[in-house]
Amino acid sequence: MLGEYYRNGELFIAKLIRRREENKAFLTTDEVLKDVKIDDEFIKENFREPVIEFLGRSNVSERSTEGVIIDLFRKYFEVSGNVKKKMLFSMDIECEGDLNESVIPEKLKNRFKTEGFTLSEGAAVTKRKENEWVIGDKERFVVRKKAGKLNIYANTILYASFLNTKRGVCSYCGKETEVFDHISYIFPLYRKIDSITPDEAKLRFCKKCGFTLYCGMAYLYKKGKSKARKAEKNIRFFFYSHDFDALEEINKHFNNQEMLDVSNYNEINTNRFCVSAFHPYETLFVTLFEFVKYLKRKNLIKDVGEVIKNVKLILAAGSGQIYSHRSIEGNILDKLTRFFVTIIEESERIYKGIERNKRPKKEGPADLIFSGFFKNLTINKGDFGEDCRLREEFTRHLFSEGMDFITLSAILMERKKNNQRFPPYYTNFIVTYMEVFGMDKELFERINRLGYELGKEMRGTNLENFVWEIHRARGAEQFYTSLVELQAKLKTSIDLRPINEYEKGWREAKAILLNGMLNAIYGGKRNE
Image 1 (tube, helix red, strand yellow):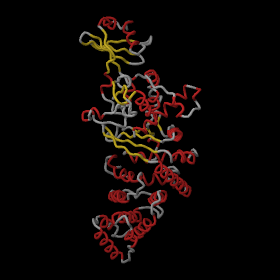
Image 2 (spheres, helix red, strand yellow):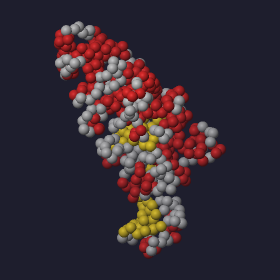
Image 3 (tube, helix red, strand yellow):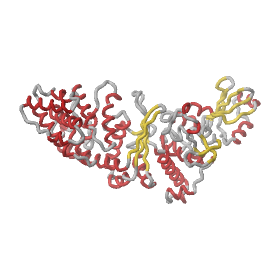
Image 4 (cartoon, helix red, strand yellow):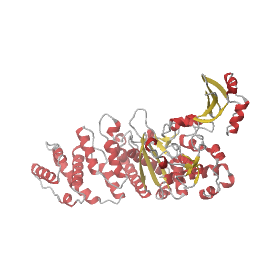
């Protein structure tokens, strides 16, 4: 994952240089990077640029202090508290009198300049408390009197990492050089508990590799925890491709004002999405659906669809110091794209056939199947995170080319118990997914049809609750016994061949059969 994130940093550095140097505007990313020299001067000049891209210009500007940026980082990264307490240098106390008079003496200004900071004409000093002063400028410095010295500290990104080095080996390039080990905002997707991590196992980076990784945040997409949902996890993801052109193309299209909320730190704009989500996989699933919907609306599916095959997506989710990671390959993203396009087109066709006064008010033409089905996979538990827990498990399998009928059946049975509606467009969603992902849908359709036909015979009779007898079957023998009993009660013959032929086992066959029954008893029309 380190290499994939680094690639995004290289892409942004090349973009930055092209923007500033006209003679390099038409060079390839590899050509631009060939001549880049990442030294202290380059880092000081450009360290705000990836932050502006990550958090948005409405939140960060070229004038934003490092202290302000660090505070904003804390919303998404595990930034340790000592970042703000970096001591830059010490001086004798002869400047104390001037500081008490709200004057910055020339000697102190010159020392700042020697250390690489030039105070502007507008810089001002105020006494915050006894033996402590604050100098406010483009950066914010704190002066503290201690043991007969004036110690100058900075709220600084630079001196906590890039400019606070010692001899060592870079964890990325492997060179022995000057390295630093404060990486919380350099590579924010890797976080170990410092107290139990051996010193030799900690990540350390040289200035070039560290700053390149730091620039990766320019293409890091995120959704933070909402204030109302304390248990919610931060969700971050980024794209990767060995092909810089493909990587640039996918980021260019994803980084738009319909997908990102410029008023909320450039977060994924879930407020506009057709389905609300809580957990990582379901949030990503809805996000990708909305992205494909955007591409289709802009007639970009053909062009971007080819690019998607050559990229992969890396998802990181968690809170505190614990993150989980998942890599989703381009072939999966390509199939998901085709799946979403298919159900969008089918939704638009169905929508046109609905009388105007009967069309749903909340779902648009493109959302009908996705929203109708996916929104109705939650369970009323009184807590949104718990409501979505089973849907998250079901969605996790969708990213692995799998259809988790057993979890889906658990969702539907819980919804039945809570008197919640059967998810509309159940068959449309399931069959389309199986077709696109090359799964054997014939046996599914046969078992689903058997369940649906049995459900129709049970509907409106005292046998409706017999689904619980089947659901409670804990072994193959008990399952088959319940079907024989149902056959006797219905006075009909049940063709068990599809169930016997289902190679994935009786549990999954039972789940598909039950889902078909529930669809007939509590669902809508046959095509749902």
